[in-house]
Image (cartoon, rainbow, N blue to C red; front, top):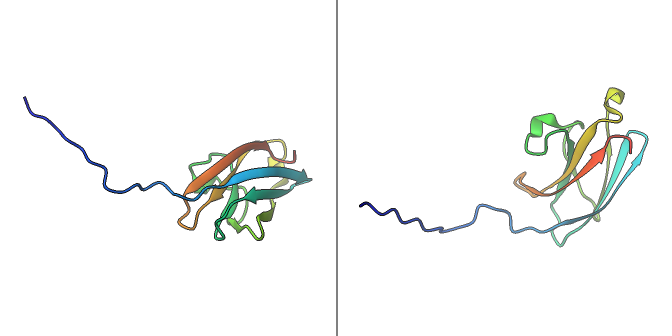
Length: 103
């Protein structure tokens, strides 16, 4: 009987850790606060977390001092279910949190 052996040589998962401290809405503007030791993280708001094409903002925004302010351009999205995602420098999702557009 054939035997198949697999060996993992390197992890493709991001080693970067982040915690979403808060997601605060003021109308269609979302302020995201994150705690992480990494300095090159960005954030996005998506309807489907794994699909970058489902983004509700123009482009992912870099976190500065652990914060980012993101504006939803389409006011028809108010009340829609969405997910705030935190991305590492390669665009991998390292953290996510469900939210409702507009709070």
